[in-house]
Each structure stands twice: as structure tokens, then as C-alpha cells.
Length: 334
View 1 (spheres, one colour):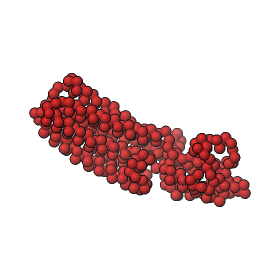
View 2 (view 1 turned 30 degrees about the vertical axis):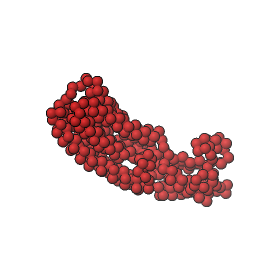
View 3 (view 1 turned 60 degrees about the vertical axis):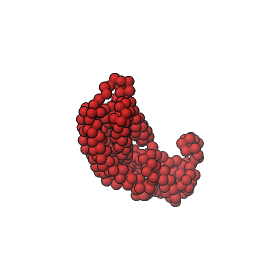
View 4 (view 1 turned 60 degrees about the horizontal axis):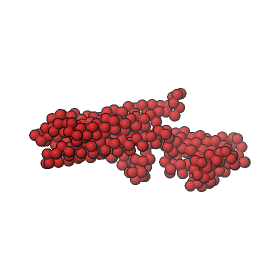
């Protein structure tokens, strides 16, 4: 499952890279020909997106390396680092340059440009860019929608919970690119109609705001993943229910799940075993329960089960501090 998702994510990123590279070159020529601040901002936007696809490809490749002695849980989280760098690049290479272009034009430090004499160049480039971005957006949107459907989650909820941010990054980038093309088109059109460069400047500033918003959303998603999030709440509830239902277990004292990569979940549980269970019974039960959890959920890679007494006061305080209450036995919602 993870390998299939990785292949599709690679296809999505490669398609976005090809589209953005062509668009960046075309927009660059149009910006030079027209002198438009909006076109210059859009050029920076597409250059940043092209660079970002390279970062995403690096992240996909490096995060797929197998576990080794120094990294016993693998390199899954490295994908989040590279995607976080994408958010930084969107802001640093795209948003800041767009703000700069807009301010320059508003304060009169940029010439009037040539867009009044040859606006057709910019309009043609923006039209082609919109079509290419739409093709890339369609692939990213399809992948994200299919993943959300497979997880039985609404699209927004999936984007918030996903542990595979690559396709989401491309989707957000392409969505911003499509909106940015429309903003640039509007800025150029109003500049041509009114003769006021303020409209062109406003378009550049709006593109900067748009890219800043995308960078913040991507940054938030990846910071949460890097700092360690729990698994899907439905997986957590099912794990707790399965452990509590085991005949050898009297009480699920504590349970922790951590996402450490795309479709990679670590489960740690502290269990109070029945007093009648001997050491051999506990060993066999732990092996069986770990196997059952991995079979029930492909995302679960590692399972650690620890026998502890339910009345340990220090442990009880830590559990209450984490969940606001202690876990109840034999209940999936405890």
C-alpha cells in the first residue's frame, strides 16, 4: 500500500514539475516583454513551484530508504522535513518577491512597463499557464480525493490528518497557481482598462498574500507531523478495543501511538494482565496481540506491549495528564 502511494506521489510531483518548468519559462518571457509586476510575481511563483517539486522528489526518495542501525524506525519523517522546506521556499521565493514587486510599483520605483502596447503576450501566456496548471491540479486533486475516500474521511479532514503531505503540497501549490493566474489576469486587465499601475501592483500584492497563506498551511501540517502526532483516532480506538478484549488483559492502563512516516505507526501499550496469567501466557499473548494489530492495520509497523500494574500512582498521574482521565478496562472509548 505504501509503495503504491509512493509511486503515485512521484507521478504527481513529476507532472507538476514539468508543467511548472514550462510555465516559469513562458511567464519569464512575458514579464520581460510587458514589465508587469503581476507577471513578474507569477514568474517568481512558478520558479518557486518548480524548485519545490525538486525538493518533494528528494523527500520522496530519501524517506523511502529502509531502516538501519542508526535509524531503526526508518527515514519516513525525512519527507516532512523536505515538505516543510517547500513551505519556506513558497514564502521566501514567491511571496516575498511578489510583495516586493507590488510595493515597487505602488511607490513608483518601477516603470510603467510595456503592457499597454502588447498585452496579448501576457494574456496568451496566462491562458497557456492556466491550462497546464489545471492538468497538474487534476492529477493532484484525484490522488488526494482517492486517498480521502480510502480513509473514509471528508477532504478537509483528510488534509488535516494525513501523514503523506506530498500530494497535498502539490494540490495546494497548483490551487494557488490557478488562483494566481486569475489574479494576474485581472490585474493586467484593469491596468489596461484604467491606465493605472495600481491595479497591477494590487495583483502582485494579492499573489503574495495567497502564497503566504499556502506556506502557512503547509508549514502547519508538516510541523505537526515532525513533532509527532498520534495515529488516526479510529485506529487508536480499534487498537484499544482489541487489546482490552484479549482474555489475558484485565485493564488497558496506557496507550500511545506515534506516526513516524507515511503509513507508518508505532503502538506502545501498558497492560494489566490477569493475575492468573503466567509468564509464558503473557509472552504468548503479547506475540499474538502484536500480530493481530499489524494484520488489522497495515499502517502499524511496530508494537510494544508492557505489563504494568493498574494501581501504579506515578503512571496513573501521567496517563491522566495525557488524556484528562485514566483509561477504563474493556471499553473502546475509554
